Length: 433
Ligand code: 5AD
Ligand code: SF4
Image 1 (cartoon, rainbow, N blue to C red):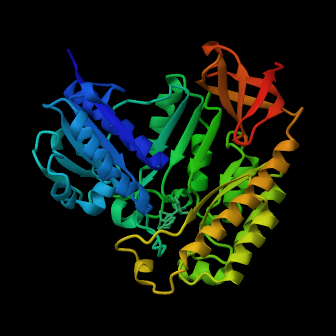
Image 2 (image 1 turned 180 degrees about the vertical axis):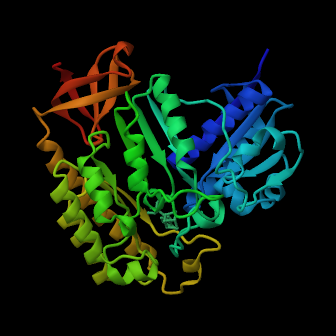
């Protein structure tokens, strides 16, 4: 009987892909099969996120539960960003953990597994050319890494400390991977990097100069590949050439994530984001001029140290001007080893909560108004998930989630869908062609 692996993945798409990498290694080299039933697993992995404080505290309570309920012989491994930044402290706080494996070291899972109390968290470890085996959660859409690490030094962000310096993966490896997933039936690829449009700044070895725009051009030549998505681009690197390619290349999905973080030029400076309010608005204007149908999503942090009422008003002003299609909003959470951790002009907790509520209420209104205009429209939807009650869901080119009544025959298929009813996060429709 094969050994069973239970894996829980927290955090971003990058972590989801890292989990796929680890599953691939463990299947291929150690004969594991995945299970959803933790108590029957021989190996339990938690792939952690450390971008904010909350998931980190959750980790230790969860580890306690896993330890109580697991099979006696089962091993527990802590992987990912929290593993990178806490390292052997995890073994001190939870001595029943067998090993700790950092976000930059996932390729070593099969080897670390056999070293009791191993702590492998070297953020300079270079796995940019490592050939991971095949394992993908979805046969319809494939995550593909294009770089590892991040070279920026945003003062709030722990990621450069957990994932190390940025190294681009050679484009020939990315193209080969994309060709492989398309040959096996996927029609969509999702390119992943901490800062995708900084692609090509540094490779491990000698490499031809290729930037992100050129990578997109090369990938879109793959026949039978229909959709390309990516996350996250950085507003600082959104030059005209990139926006123009985005707009005119029919394979690139018309949905752009533009992490604003703050609408105040002063706060952006304190965050070391490298752009101003005006630059951000200028990029949105250019993008919408070139590509009117684009949907724009963003990340916003409220109550960064020193954020005044006027600074917050600037964020609200950008929200009103841009009318984002989706926002991910957070209260600032101080993180260890970041520059902002030592900033003393902390915003009062009540004010922080009020600002978050104000922002989210405004967003709800914007989204409701936008959604109301969707009724009766027809979109091409790529179906990728089977839901309960005989519904199948998928996404439009501009990233709206749409469900229709149907069976698994629709999975991996494109259909024209007319929107018949509106929900805040998901639209319902019927197939017209
Ligand atoms: N506090 C709050 N939010 C944060 N993010 C990153 N670091 C922090 C922090 N210290 C948010 C940013 C980023 C998203 C992935 O998480 O908005 O874009
Ligand atoms: Fe963090 Fe900034 Fe890098 Fe994004 S670009 S991962 S926010 S340091």
